[in-house]
Image 1 (cartoon, rainbow, N blue to C red):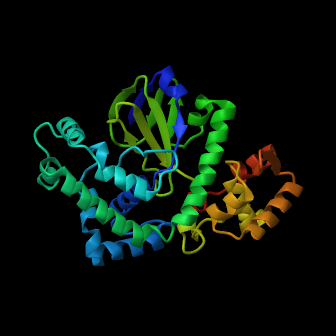
Image 2: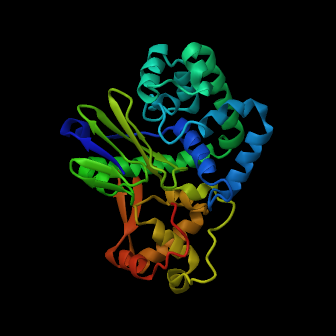
Image 3: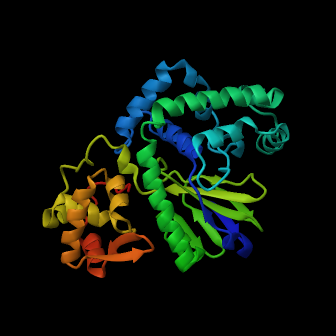
Length: 336
């Protein structure tokens, strides 16, 4: 467990941001955690990413992330410099990592001396970070850039919905519904994972970063003096899928049998309210198809439609929640 004790000023400064660089790093971690078979919906992407890492020499510096270990200096997957940075923004910030920050974080994480492969970042940080940023840029262009427009659309939808929840209901409600493996019991935020660690966030800022590649691999960044960053699984991972989710042969999808697979998929996705465009992006369906399913589900009284500014959000009625809870057999793990 990672337990973060959060004081009131930090909680009041809760914000949400996206981070292309942390997406990249989390995608590499996904490959490392699943050396044999990467699960749906990442399997097709993973095969291509591994081929790129194996055949493109320009991506060689990226191998560093496979050697860092579970706990490492935050400067290699740093706090995003704004709410909606580009990968160029984050790589430019990485290139400009000051030598005194390297010294500070290496002293903290490696009191007996850093590993040999990290020594260049201490002895010649400008050259080392330039080389790393060039490798990350090459990997991004080959493995992630083709997917980024649809990933970004899904992340924008996620940020919109979470920001709306934060504004309407406050940080307590937001944190309590953030992720099934994130527990909020004021004043402690617990990330459920094998690593044991405890920290305090005093008079800082809590930054929540949704990641398409997270798949439950919650990350926490605590080296920054002003910001504590927590990442979590975003809706929309299905945008990476090459095809529909596999259904285990030994289990029937009762919800799909009752209302059809398409409508069941949309109904499950609405456990968090979403727009038509957001659902289409997250589920990899045509907007017209999603609209048709939503109209039928609304007519059946299991889905409601509400306006939020210039957007229209769809969400579950109590009967819709009951359907998902009682009949969803969990035939396919939800990643959206």
